Length: 212
Image (tube, rainbow, N blue to C red; front, side, top):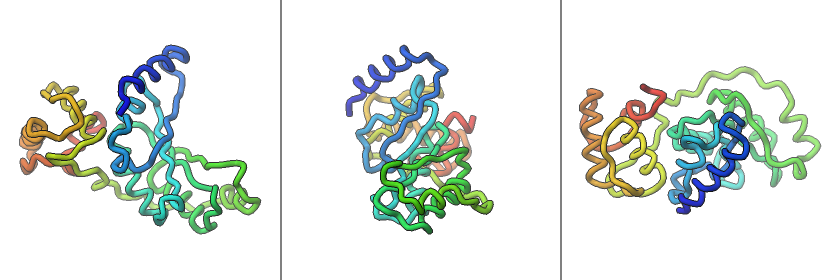
């Protein structure tokens, strides 16, 4: 919830390194579990150019594919290239590490990394360097969060910022209120969609810059 501090930090950092210096932000992978975290600042205008979510599937107690799907569906709305960060600490199984590499490829990641050197076992080095066969791209057509009236969080704030960018009004704050619901309905009507007032997989592409 410390948006002012996050902006001050990024302003100072950008002022020190310049606007073109590459910065990557690494944080919690599940945006929906951390609604008060200012992703929209660290990944917004003037923020990091790359998003490096910590997809530690074993720590998350989730299958690798499930962790990837949830991470990508929520992080992609911020519009930064995703470079997944995998888990080598806590002794993950070889098959899981290989699955992570294949999924990173399937999701179109141009790079990935691992945490961390000190806890990487000798066998892990072979696993992360062995050739991996090409895999089919993962279909992410429906991979978007669903936001509706009454919800709160940074994703809601980000949606409001996109509405303002499109020249549409939005109230301050992280609450999905009636005003945002009406604005979403208006956008859906313009795009030829059912005016549900719910931000879903059919509506997000018309709201985000990449879809313009």
